[in-house]
Image (cartoon, rainbow, N blue to C red; front, side, top):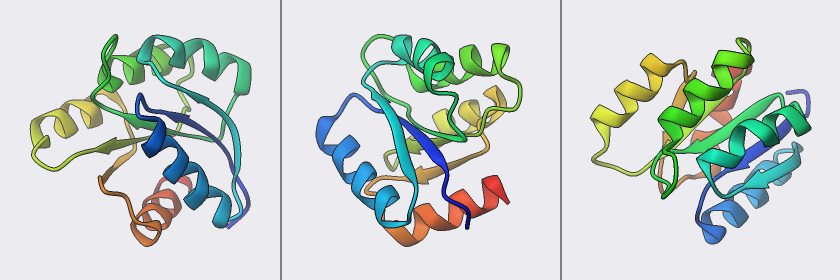
Length: 121
């Protein structure tokens, strides 16, 4: 797979670091990380990533609303939700909002790579 420019949106520093390590090990470039849904749109404008990994549960604006906000301006954005078990209804809402897929936490590299290849093609 061609290396992608990836932006990570997650309020957990530990989750962000793990995601960075996995994506970099796959050969992708992390162009930016943000910790809030509110910051996601401006960061998307700044970084113009090929892919966004988006946490659903964040304190200021959840990942579903952040996804809607990004896609309202960038129709071709590739957003993969990252969520915990037991949030099936939120996953359905995220997909309705335009997310291209989702990965369950704890994320493992094989599942993440599979979802990325399905989203990017």
